Amino acid sequence: MTDATGGALKKRLASLTRELMLIPGLSGYEGRVRRRLAACLAELGLDSWSDRLGNLIATIHGDGEVPSVMLFAHMDQLGLIVRKIETDGLVRVERLGGVPEKALAARSVLFCVGEGRDVPAVIANKSHHATQAVEKYRVLPYPELYIDAGFESAAAVLAAGIDIGTPVVYAPEVLDLAGDRLAGTSIDDRAGCAVIVEVARALMAAEHKPTVHVVFSVQEEFNLRGALTATQALSPDAAIQLDLTLATDTPDMTGRGDVRLGGGPGMSMYSFHGRGTLNGTLPHPAMVALFDRAAAAENLAIQRSAQIGVLTDSSYVQLVDAGVACIDLGFPMRYSHSALEVCDLNDLVGLTRLLVAGIQRIDTGFSLNRDDYEQ
Image 1 (cartoon, rainbow, N blue to C red):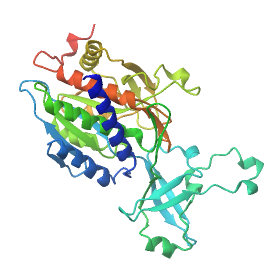
Image 2 (cartoon, rainbow, N blue to C red; image 1 turned 90 degrees about the horizontal axis):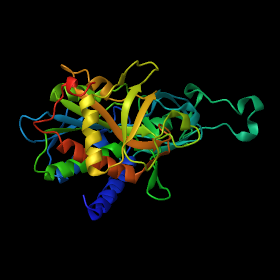
Image 3 (cartoon, helix red, strand yellow; image 1 turned 45 degrees about the horizontal axis):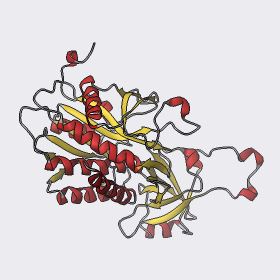
């Protein structure tokens, strides 16, 4: 890509990432995001379809006798579910996904009732003037929190379309920070979705490439469910998962690695959840070699990451059929799972270029035999 093309690429990535960040799509309720992404694919000339779980899938047909690839990112976001409506109109919730409780009090949220009918609200925070000293440094567990949308009765809440099971998300917002940095809601993983659209655009125009199955998966934040069913249906030889890479360039994160915002895309060399779900991903050596070589050939920066506490869809995708050669690639991101995550648009550009260059290197000579790589 020329510099001029790169500038146009950055503008498209910025525009679509911002747009997707503002569309609510809690796990299990991704319909609005899915429909927008389906329209993006249609604009590229790609037909797409959805499975029963809600994954959005499209196939870019490539050269025969070449390993097939599934390129995927999740389109859902974490949030809350209405659990109880009090008689006074206040609402109690359950947590859906890894919502950090210390980031909840005093946040603005959105009850997702339907397009044009969503209801804004705030998560209550006890008035400072009535807060006792013993309370000041206590993080309230989410069952003790309540949401205030301004209603004065349960009947008024129900009349607004809010009921048990209604999804709740951080109020969608986007902030333009200095340079090319974005802050806001659900950068994880709407930025990854935007990158996939741009990779699909480039691969559609490429003369030689493998067959690539593009998947925007659902329910990743709800125990990694969607991508598994898509993989079972598509049976790819290799899979590339796109998500955040933990940025470690802030004072609270420096001991966890050397990944910095603006330093280029990330490649995970090790992930392990270590909490609850004892699963993770060790990347297939063929995929590591593929992207190392692509980065070197295209003079692209690539940052390596190894983390406990991280879990992605590839953890289960790699176990389908006789095994899928998986790798996690991503963009550095700060403040994960909060209402104001931060990324750098230049990393999204670098990730897009790395993916296009790497995928196009998959040809008849590309081996997935581990003995060709392991020393």
